[in-house]
Every structure is written in C-alpha cells, then in structure tokens.
Image 1 (cartoon, rainbow, N blue to C red):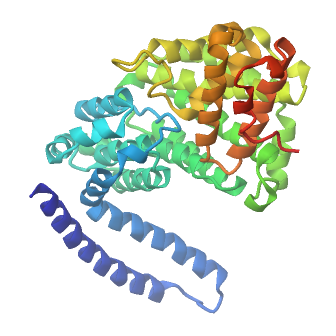
Image 2 (cartoon, rainbow, N blue to C red):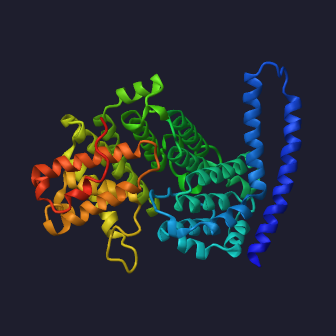
Image 3 (cartoon, helix red, strand yellow):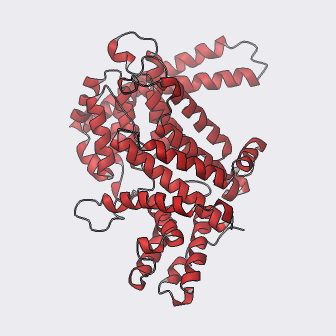
Amino acid sequence: MQWARFIKSFESNLRMSKEKFQEDLHSYHGAIPHRGQVKEPFEELRKRLVAIGDDAFTRFGLSGVLAGFWCLDYKSIKMERNIPVVKFDSFTAATEHVQELIKSGSVAAIQKQINKAWVNTLEEEDPTKYTSYIVFSLAYALAGQWSVAYRIAKAAHSIAVSWLGDESTLKSMVKGDEAAYLCAVFSRLCAKNLDNLKTSQDHLNAATKLQKTSPIRSSLQSINIEDYTDPRFASEKLACNICIRFFLEFAPENVGGHRGDMWEQLAKISTIKDESNKYIEARKSIQMEPNTFVREYVSMQLSANFLQLQLLAQGKNETSSLLPTQTRDFLSDLDGFMKGSKQRNHEDYFHGKPSWLCFVYICASATFYPELIGWNDQRTREELLARLEKYGKELRLMPYDQQRVGFFVNVVRETTAKRVPLNQIEGARTVKNLPERPV
C-alpha cells in the first residue's frame, strides 16, 4: 500500500514537471536573441536546461529517490569507496541519519530502516528538503551509485541556492556548502577525463565560499572564518590532485588521460615528495577537528592517498620521495581504523570495509611494513595474496583503476620477492592473475 502511494505521487509530480519543463523551454527559446549565432545561445540554453532539470528533480524527486533506493539489489552491491561525511549544526535528525549511514556500512541494513516515517522526520525538521536530499545522496553513495548521488547532491544545492538571502531563521541555516562539498566528491568519482575534474574543483571552491558566507554556522563562530580551512575540503583538494596525477600516469589516451597542457604542468610542478609533504601537514591539522566522524573519514582519506603516493614513488624508484617514518605513521593510522572498527559478530577486520581501502592497506603493508598484518608469516601470506586479488578485481570505478591496480600489485611482487622469492610463496600464482604493470 505504501509503495503504491509513492508510485502514484511520483507519477503525478512527473507529469507536472514535464509540463513545466516544456513551458519553460519554449519561454527560454523565444528569449534567446540572434539564434543564428549558434555557440553562445546554445551554451546559454544548455545552462538553462540544466537549471530546469534540477528544478524538476526537486519537485518530484524524493518519492522517486526513495522508490529507487528500495529497488536496489543489495546482494549485488560491492562497497568500493567510503562515503564522505557532512556536518549539520542545526539539524539533529539529519545528523543522526547520516551517522546511521556511516556506521551501518550496509545497503541492506539501511533499506530496512528507510520508510516514509524516516523521511517525514527529516522534512519536519527541514521543510526545504535540503537535508533530505543530502541524506539520500549519501545513501546512494553507500550503494556505489555515484552518478545518482551526484545528481541528488546537485538538487540539494539548487534548493539551497533558491533560499539564499532569505531572512527566516530556518532557511538561513540552509546555505548549500555541504551539498557543494558532496558535489565535489561525487563528480570526482564520476570523472571520465581530466576536464571532468575541473568541475569537481569548481564545486569545492563553491563549498569553501558558501561555508564562509554569513550566517556562519555556530561551530565556527568562535574562530576567524577567513583563516579557517575545513579539513574535509583540504583533504578533498588533495584527493583531486592525486586523481590528476593518476590520469596522467595511468589513464589510456582514449579517455583523455594525457590531454591538457595546464594539467600536465601542474603534475610536473608538484613532485611526489612535495605532494606527500602536504599530507603530513594535513595530518597534523585533523587532530584539532572535534567531530569524530569527520576526523575518522579525513584520516582514512589522507592515509590511503598518502600511501598511494608512496607506492607510486616506490614503483617509479624515486627514492628521494620515499618517507619511511611518515609512511609508518599513516599506515598505523589506517591499521587502527581497520582493526579497531570490526563489524559486529565478525572477527574478520576486512569485513564491511571498502575494497579501495583494503587494497591500499594490503599493498602498503606488504611494501613498507610487512610485519603489521603477517606478510612475513607463511600461514597468513597466502590469504593476503588471495585478498589482494579479490579487492584488486573489484576496483573498476575510475578509468585508470585497472592500470593503477597492476602497477601497485607489481610493487608488491617486487618488494615481497626481495624478502621471499616468489617461487617459494604458496599462493603467489593468485597475484599473477592481476594485471601487470602498464608500460
């Protein structure tokens, strides 16, 4: 019965949105001058069509979003990445729902919890539906539906923009900085070429600007907001930089991995060592973050990306970029998360963790800290090699993932072989099933 009501609501709103779309399209088309000059009018029309689409999405979206989430086949979902963390100073129910998403780590568990009452709680607290869209964007991210999550986050941002300048107490709390941050993360994970990453950077710049726009959230009112850098935003900027580097290092030509002089110059200017040092500074600042969920997420992101830079330096034989002491620090941080947050009733600390995180953790430990999880122990080595194959094969989100996986696996092969010859490692054949290092 509840399902039928949602479908009926979805259909009704969809018809209304379609009529509105056609009406606005004719209006905009008639308003554009000099239609014979194609480029500028077309770009203007494109922007307005996007705006109309976002508006239509916010009109009928929640019913469709909820129905779509219920329809996801949780059995086929592989958790490949962590979901980002958002902060709401003024919305308690939204904060609790976000924390439930993070702690569950399971689409099946969230599907059982989400119902109309769950949505009503969010809408009663925030009638603009801004936080509702934020929470649902994270729910789809948990399911690995990154393009849908991005679309929903953009709808949330559109809602916030529509309320900018409103003086009412409730609506003034909705600025759009959290939505813009999610747009930055999700657009990066949807990037198919370097040009797409520029969109991610634009979203991140918007998030920073909105966060510093009045009214300032209560948790930031005691500091100099102009000098403040949100640790999530700083970490995301570094994540975007490492994506640029990976596109240039690993992406095939046909996905734009080597296009754009500006991007290539940026990658050349920032050496692996220079970029690694930025992570070391960021690690110091995250200790001051009072929000536990933010601190843990940023720490994981910083650790995994720093370790990837070090694996890259190892594989390229850039010994001057290797930072052994700091590498162990970051690996210890990641180890603390992996072993300190086991899922209930599961002794396996890999259970419920994203494939990307597990893969980097295994590669880095094998290369830099083998005693950490038993690489030097014959009894555990075969299991770790099998896990390396499993997680490596699951990483297919980014265009360069297969090449990156092959590169890192070869680093593990070479460093492990120096300690124990590969022909003496039981299970070494398993690792050979993974792609070789790209030439």
